[in-house]
Image (cartoon, rainbow, N blue to C red; front, side, top):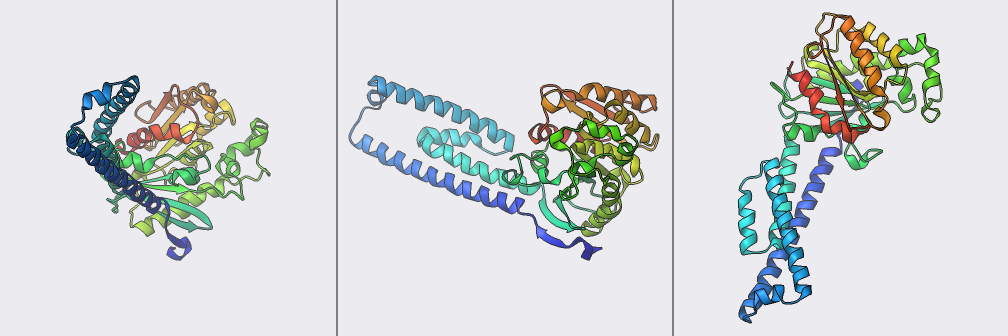
Length: 388
């Protein structure tokens, strides 16, 4: 099994981020050095020459413009240092304000920004490290938590190319910001931090073909007419079952062996957004022995509509403790999702599942359909699963 994974080492995300943090901190330290040197140099000259600060600051209209400009920037910068410092848990923020009073804001603010980069680097390191390997010629990214152990929960997620990959390397400059959610404390793990697995879709086989619920599409070929022409796959070969079986029978055992995890259904979840939301709900019915929870975000209900919702609900096992998270937004692509989500909830309740016990169904008004929106709430489904 270990040979089959063909590990290729640590992914570039964490080293790249460390390198960027280091470069940025050096840059800000350099600005701080210039700021303190120029402040002391010109202050010294002004004192030796007996120059009048008040007259220089407020002598003409130009002086007033520059003075007001500096004062407003200083107030905004001080506010940012206090708010951001508290958010990141930086200590003795008041010292920066004292230093600004006896030196210069041109020294203190870049100094704060440099120290902020170091604080962010520490927080990111606390969330774990990201590794990459290939299994059956498919790329797998793994966020390995710092507190990895045999009882570490496992969360497998679809669409790996927008999940743990550094933002500047993703197709749209966005990702789910899961390391940030963990390092900031938004993800509240009662025991161990979850190991998060990002599974890349085989682009040669087609995203739609792998993520669409195969058995349901086979029964309803008319669903193909509901797909936007731009998104229509090149062929209609169903690969959803092969993909689901790969996750349950190949990927999870490989993850368990590679990271020394003792798999437990109650600590194993699957998640995704859009078509990945459909694939998540489909996985719960296809492999209920593997997945203890499904976290479906912005599920793409227009594919199949109420029929898809009804058949996915009908395929779910009842009374075996599976947890289901379902949500949607109200903007852009998410706009038509809510009516079908309500039908899905109705179908779950008819089968005897209890809201807020067996499943959660949330609506995030004013949010849309991209990784930035999902990143803002990614901790909610993860916490809901981990803290049941």
